[in-house]
Length: 513
Image 1 (cartoon, rainbow, N blue to C red):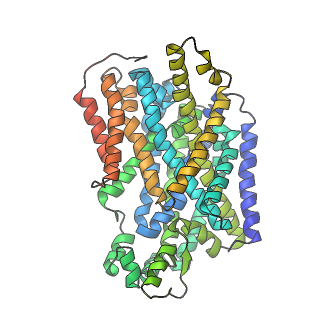
Image 2: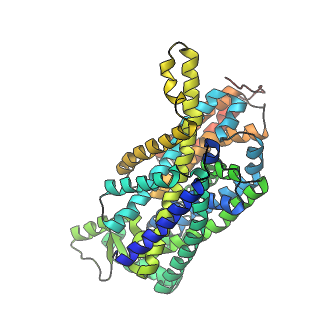
Image 3: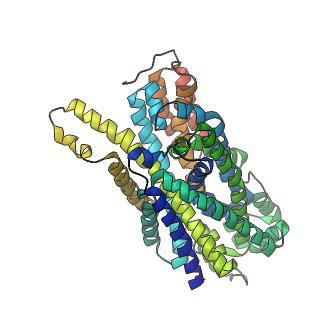
């Protein structure tokens, strides 16, 4: 139960991050500093990546998935860590040497402005889904704390995200990320250690889960029957199927490589060496945090049921077992553990660290999305209007009166406003499933065009590359909504590659096609 001690700890931790973000953002005077920085050391790069990678999906979402599927929830943070390694080893040098400030500018330089425009729209969809997941995570946190309706909790979370990023950009994300790196890592290790102590080790975790599923009604409600099925689900790293779980890891890994937000962290490094080190530092810490969040989710499964599960028990004429609590939804597993199973003073600090972690991740993603909107959509649209309607100056005059920095900030406000509306429509979804879909869509749209532009310039047909982006995205979405076997990212990547090689022929670069 929330106490004044919790509130003091939360306010202290959140205020600390906001103050650091504001102080670091005071040096931001132009759009370049706002979006890429360019003077960060290794730990600042690590902090910026940590602040965007370790959001609600990696913490609240991982605990939620572990509540239902056990250790297979770890794949989310494993994939994120592998993506950081791939970005550092294979992509950091080439993208910094490119002279561009967005990944889509690299693609456009090789395959034309149309590829940039289409890629921007497809890429923005993927980032937006992830922002929605962060809004869902923040609303679960705020709703658990103050027992607010979903809509109001989402609105408050969105406002806090705006405050965090609007006045600092990538520098505030990095400075705040260092604090989060320390707080989140320490708090996660404490939470994981407490779980093992409270449960009596890993064996105690499984015994708790078995006791919860002693009711046949509850086991049937979750598609389980017998101890063997329980152990297979909660103790199996590929509990949802090898193709699905490994495909999710692949989506995370490739999505990190192709996401503008993480590329901005690489660009923010003072040197390529420091940028690489920062990404590798981040990749080292991420799996440990994911493991701790997985333990928390499994512990909560052994001591809580959801409101829907309670309704099923009551409909069958069964009562709630003694000592078992009720969660409004599985997304509240982590915040409820903090409130009910930690000392109040420590719980307040941990809750504050978790909340600012979610807000910081959402702010970084929002910044990346706004950068795409301004540089890859608004700019191209304005140029197109001026070209086709040279006499109607009013069609493109609005953006000309606003600085790029102002356009970026207004875009962030608009993106988060729409995200609140969409989050209410997806309330009750697995947060991590939205994350897998989000990162997978980004990878399908951009992986091959970006990689070929960096390493194999002039060797692929520009129109084929242009066509592969929407075809791959459509194939992935069809795989998702038609419930095809395995992870939908396989279908998207395969379709994209088939289109590129089916029309492959040597072609020159087309800067304005």
